[in-house]
Length: 94
Image (cartoon, rainbow, N blue to C red; front, side, top):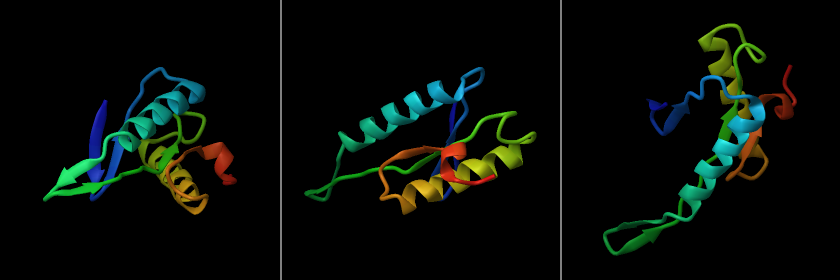
């Protein structure tokens, strides 16, 4: 279930999906965005996404905690060069 979280941030809820499955979905989303440039006013815009992945309850016992950890992982993805998906545990956070 996708939804806009704010600005240019989105959340995709994947109930009953383990971390490996969530990472596979994130990679498919990342690939789909990368191969779908936008044509605006005779200009082609190449796009990419940085994705942070966190799960419940392993990464937090509340929605706010899981979102905060996914956000942390997303910033790690950006620091690692953008256009990638990072699991919270791989982000080096505790």
